[in-house]
Length: 404
Image (cartoon, rainbow, N blue to C red; front, side, top):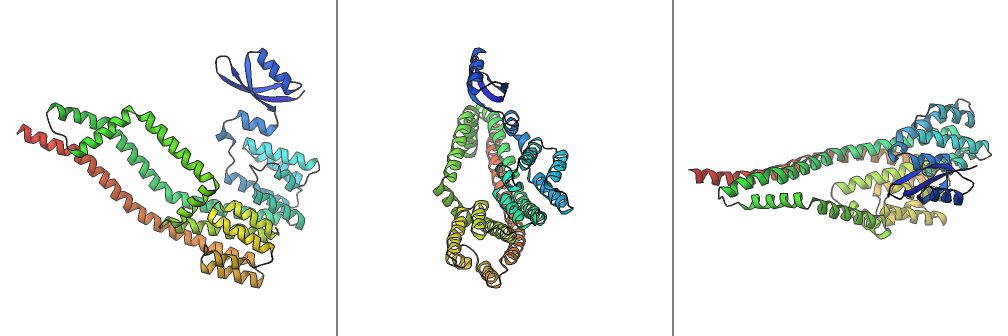
């Protein structure tokens, strides 16, 4: 008898979920109703679905580091002469992540059932990217799967390092903003009202900074839920707009036009473009399919449109560098290097050099960004502290005059 996953609502309103055996979904729904539950969702309980539905999301996350280690181990074992089935069996025993262990087991079972490795991976698009599946398919066709897996592991590791550099550069400013916001909210909500009460009783006329901070504090204390709701609605509206086609395009165009930050975003995107296309082309993936995958990986609609135009030109047999030159979205040196790669027949090698160059440039951009941001935030913090101190000290001076 098959097992079904269910979610249901009790008469008290409590949400319950679990698994039960039944001959069909209708039979399970009837069984739940007899027990006093209103069924919300009933689905066949596969191994992957059980993990995804019954465990919290943070326990289901598969990190980049885990995926890189899996690919590296798989490449080493295949290079040592082990079969795919034997390699996956060993991996399944070593992996600690429960979700990834289940997926590797499912991939192994599909291969045993007659599927190719790439076909089995393609059944799990949320875990194995289209880039990875395409490279595995090319490796199977060329008989060079271990080399392809090693190349993908190096690519994934490089992308993870690049993301870490950018996040590291933004961590300190984000920490400063968060700390400053919390301190201002605390002072305005709890400290300033007590001082204002003392000044009011003493008959002191409050100066403008004190009044402003006092009103901000009162608003935060009495309408905090409305402020959070409005903020959440604004964030939701912005995210929804960005996810739309025109919104994504306008947001990416705005991001690329920002001073200091814009060049960093452009260099990061170009590096990802060059490294991904080099990895795919060097692995034997067809150019048209490679450009489709690059556009997905790029995650920038402005440059993504240029890649789409490149695909159309490649389909007609035209040069990729001509499209880049007309678009003016890629720097002239990058366009020239790609043109040389096309002329010499070493496009993958030239794209690798471009990516290496831009990764070094990203490091310099990050240093420049942090060098600019630190004094800017110190000035902002100084202004905020001065405003808070003036709102407290000015009434105190008036009180001292009154006492004299």
